[in-house]
Length: 121
Image 1 (cartoon, one colour):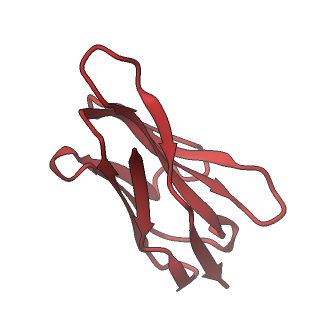
Image 2: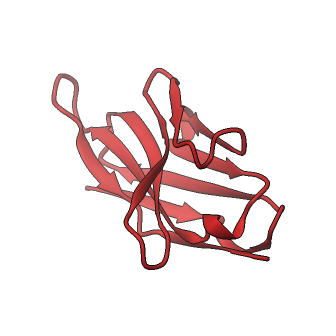
């Protein structure tokens, strides 16, 4: 019903920047919360940033002051701007969204396919 397509990952030197994008399409009435998780190599998946339907944001300590989450509701898209990247930011980044397919119902969670971010020293 709903697909989340991520883009913007890649290889960057330490101190550089990347902007990740995640666009939702399909049977969408509205989207509530959106955000990003990441999974470093050999580690567990962890929350990076979260944004509510009303635009309130939360960040994991690892990204505070360096990462910014934003959304464009007209495009059903969430972004993650990552600055001052460090090698420990290397991970597969996954976006998520809570999608309403009709008014009054509960949201259903959807996930992107993941995009690789590699930060070299």
